Length: 118
Image 1 (cartoon, rainbow, N blue to C red):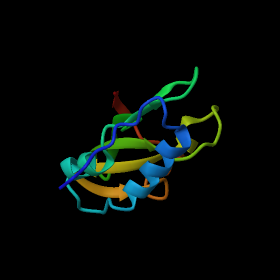
Image 2: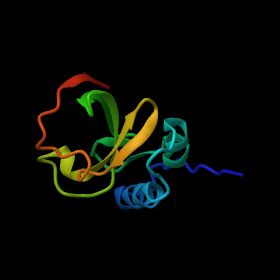
Image 3: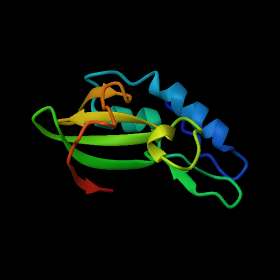
């Protein structure tokens, strides 16, 4: 039996990031996108006047591995407001399956072509 907890105003960004890091350890290469969505949940958190963060924080379609890949970014770190990329962990899907997790797989310095932001 799966249980989902929706983070509300009493939850903190630190808890949200910590939960995402813990849940990402359950995600593995070859896993279906629907499984990842179930594991990661669709939680959100808002603290004070700051932005609201949701799961995933952002998604986009890029060109990678000779075709289109979908990338979901999950908020996992607090690194400042300058570059959102330093605060998230990417999960990369191709043909509906996980092909890579993290910036070691999806190097932000690579010149990928963003097709569509969501």
